[in-house]
Length: 268
Image (cartoon, rainbow, N blue to C red; front, top):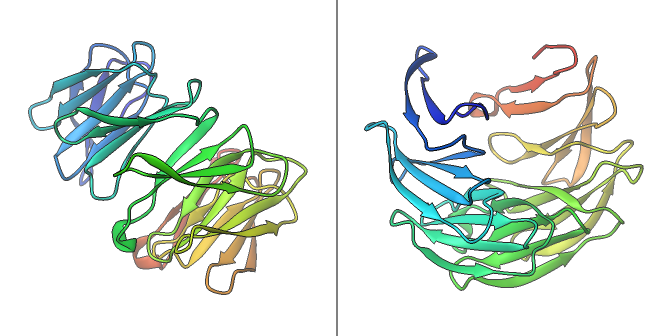
C-alpha cells in the first residue's frame, strides 16, 4: 500500500493485518498496482514521469522506466502481458510489455482520459476501455494492435468518470459526472454496442458489481440510496436506503454479502 506521503510501499500481511516490511522508493509514489503473474509491484511517479517495478520479496526496486508522458492512470490487462499508462493532459496511452518493461507502442487522441479499464479475457479478445471525462464518450482500444477500434458516443451532456465492467457477464455501465442529468449508460460488451441510458431518481457516484457480475450497485451521489440493477433483466430491482451517502462498496465471499461504506456516518 502507499499513503501519498512516504517514499515507500508498505507491505501488509493479510492473515494477521500486520506490517511485514516496506520497499524504499526514490520518491513518493502516486499509485500502485500488483502483477501477480510476475510477482511485481508497479508504482508511478507523476512528478518525474517514472514507473518503478519492485520485488516484494527482495524489498527493493528492480527496474525504473523513464517515460515521455505523465503516468496519471495505469492498468494491467487480465493476462498480465501489458501495462497501460495514460497521460490525460496529452491524451496519450502507452503500452508497456511485462515483465521486461519496454514501451511497446502508444495511442493518441485521448485528451480527458479519466479511467482505464480492461475487460476480462473470457471474451477471447482483450480490449481496453477509456472513459473520457471531457465528453460523453468511451474509447475502445485493441492493446495488441494498439489501435482505437471503436468510439462509443453516449447520450447526454456530461463526460464519463467510470466504466464498470462485469467479470462474468459481458456487460458494462458507464457513469457520467454527477449532475442534474441523472443517468448511467448501458453497454453490451459482446458487440461493443451502446444500449442507451438508464434514467435514475438521482445521479450516482460510481457503479459496483457483485462477485459474479449479476448485479450492479449504484450509490446515489446525493443521499443514502443505493439502486440494485439486475444485468440480465436490465432493470432496477431494489432500492436500499442508508443514513448517509455510500462512498464505497465491496462484494463479499461467493456473492453472499456486500459491504457498503458510509464515510459521513463512519459505518460499514
